[in-house]
Length: 294
Image (cartoon, rainbow, N blue to C red):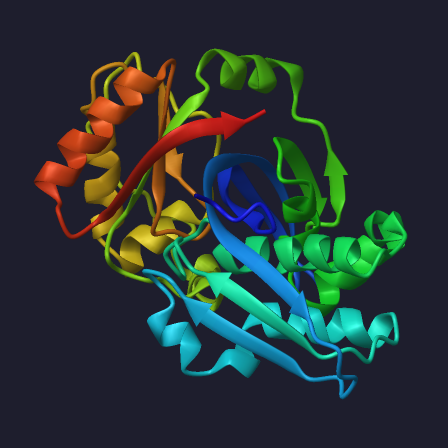
């Protein structure tokens, strides 16, 4: 039975990702349509009676081994430290992260963990929800991570600038998601550094990969990091090819900087069948299907 005190950190999927330009401060302006899958890491927090400002982060789960070696470098620890300093909280806390999402895979696992940590800390310490205020979101985006503001909301949204400007999805896209509300995530066992992809973006942005896809399976949006990521990791092309061949698939693409690719289906049965087929072909890959959080 799941612990009701856990906060869910949902997988973030970029249906589209348009990198517009690089700013003088080193960040990139972007425009991205985002959904969240009902697949998640889990965060729990225990407040101790002592007041030494100690944060003890414990990491477990299928993808927790590498992260557990350096807990103070984890974004969850950094987020808790930021929060405690901002609100002058001296309590000692124990944070548990059950890491079930693959790392460095383009589905915002770290940002989702950070957002779940913030949501949980707000509840635990009864902080006014001004944390969601626009100015705070800009601060969070710059201090901790550009994807964290949208992950605080964890439902279908559009983001602009560096990620702090949040709006509703375009109506036509929202309708497409409502009618194709099941998703499959396919992650080759190849973590990709977001920094590496962005550093090579200009070099490869003019290149394209030709993939044989069904004519009745259109792209749902543009991801102009895709060709860069494909040049870094060829398995991304294979993942998209496998998705394109699945019965009933409506849309597919690559999320974020990769390597996770996604496909949308109109029902759970089709998505689950595709999950089982791809898992049989690529048993070492991480393959999951779920509903989309509307």
